[in-house]
Image (tube, rainbow, N blue to C red):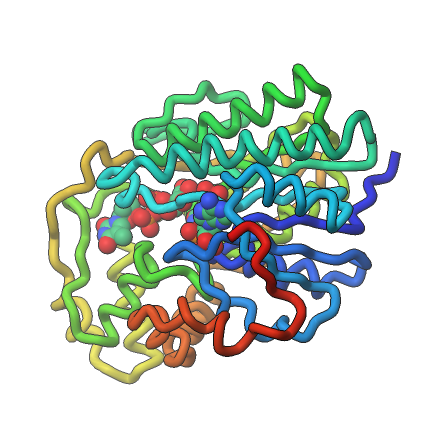
Length: 362
Ligand code: NAD
Ligand code: DAU
């Protein structure tokens, strides 16, 4: 049975990865459907991320909270949704430590609400798919060797990763019990344009430019596996087209860096583009109190998606990082708007009355 892929509900499409995914999908020759982006526009949801698409007839934005049962049910019926790509989440580990409530209500209860709406709307349709975008953090923390496999036992350690593990379990339970066609991807750290400047890469680039300290947690010895966001988007599109229902795929960069080495490398890349002395940036490195419960190392074994679906990372790290730095240096308006909080009012001034935004779900 062919998948429909005609009316795709993207949740959290105004965030970092969701907005990159929407732009990626609309650029695919093989995609002839429409996209409905349902996003609550929390602090991390930025309408400017997709401002260039506001006149694209294939794209609709709806401000909606995935915890709102009525709003979610209405999305399925009004837009005859046949595919869900579920990004919407509270995504920042540090925030989950200082305020975990929204992580539980959005990541766990919001996912539950979407699953129930999909089950209600789809019945036993075989041409539909619920794809859940998840994280490698559900597997816990590694020592100095080894890598996470799809079969690695879950061992989440932060409120964020525990909430994502909970949502993964719900998705699998709905597949097992109610035969909902689902797929899951567990991805490593993404970098690229439009990432909110609370995550490591944009924090470092922007602080360098502004001459502010570069805060490295602990001794900077924690290891992350970095993947260009466009490669993540392509992995999800590949799964939507070819991933059998019920399957889970690990997605990663096969590109491990200790935080301190990555920060020093970024100093070099930024210095090359700004023409400032690299030492001026290196001098800003400041070791700060470690993140409580800081996971030591993540590394992804993504052999399955490569072998079974033919996905590959298309961006090597030097070019991906260099393009990312160039994007942050060039997009000063986006940065100023995010820094000032002005992006939160962009919707009202630029979008209202254009027919593709309404009060749905407010
Ligand atoms: P992000 O924080 O940039 O974006 C999250 C989006 O979800 C925002 O637009 C926000 O407004 C929206 N949202 C939050 N709560 C909502 C709610 N209740 N209802 C509707 N919308 C809501 O996050 P991101 O980095 O783009 O991550 C997207 C997804 O990918 C998340 O599920 C995250 O767990 C997963 N993931 C992220 C990474 C990474 O490196 N950033 C890696 C692997 C997986
Ligand atoms: O592994 C996938 C996960 O990657 C995603 O599921 C999360 O949504 C995403 O936020 C990311 O989590 P991390 O905690 O790994 O990302 P973050 O950018 O917050 O931190 C990366 C590493 O850098 C981590 O070891 C903490 C460290 N760090 C981070 C910041 C923001 C610093 O040393 N200084 C900083 O200022």
